[in-house]
Image 1 (tube, rainbow, N blue to C red):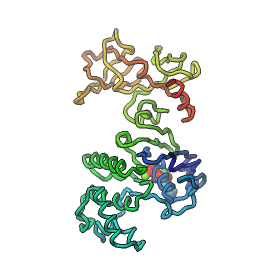
Image 2 (image 1 turned 60 degrees about the horizontal axis):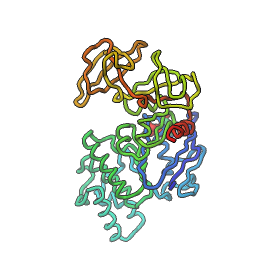
Image 3 (image 1 turned 90 degrees about the horizontal axis):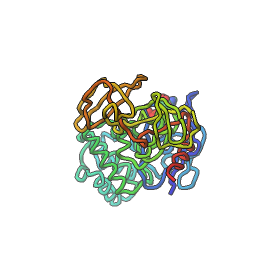
Length: 359
Ligand code: ADP
Ligand code: MG
């Protein structure tokens, strides 16, 4: 069920178009990530959803109603900010209770709600602590408890884990995902970290330059990136220029290869993507492509090998085998490991093309 929709949302600051015709549908009860590099417009999208900012044009639809002009405090959503925005002169209980206390709700009800929220973020018995007596991870939890106490339909989180060290970050990723499932509400989580988005989300919305590049499940986006930006931004990839020869046949590095893509005009210039883990090292005779090794290193569960082909394209290979020779080794891959990207394909065209293969 669609809970929230952005329709043709554009945001312009002075002469700077920061969001360009954003169309997004958010379903109830799912975990969404808005993923993109710094400056791609992630925070601006979140502010427009929350009502802290108005779009220059376009609409925000929530539960079927146009809420574009509804103030933030009238929307049944809450935001966890990057810097937590906690009150240092109040203790944990007072911070979490703050919004409810303003509304003059009965103290008994407030106490019950605060206890429940603190339990959800595993901070029982921390009510009396001051904010500066908490670790970064605990402050983060207080900010989340404060945001969920009113049982919002959507929780918006703007890079909430970026201040935490790696280990705590991983732990909080897991806990946030768990919390979202326990609460059963919709989370919209902003991050610039592709690994984080892949690990946590039901759906990822990939942004660059104020444009939604691609949206879909983590597996869809990883396996079928729509364009160069997405292929490069999400995981490691080898991207090489090529040409569509026929349905299920592409050419790159001067050779023809069987692939799994069809429905693209013949002779169209394309780019192909092959993920490093889909490449394997073999003999020159058994290889589909022959490369020369530039360097290789052991990475625990695989070897990371850098190589180049006769056209000087670089190849990154994650192989369980070590390359015994440096000159003229074979690379092996299956037809379905070749992902074809058209230049300038819209997301609608791309989705239609993928669906046509699946039938
Ligand atoms: P992200 O969160 O992805 O890093 P933002 O949404 O914060 O990106 O910003 C997107 C672009 O909009 C940036 O170029 C930023 O400089 C610009 N921007 C954001 N807020 C404002 C503002 N209030 N006034 C002018 N420009 C802004
Ligand atoms: Mg931001």
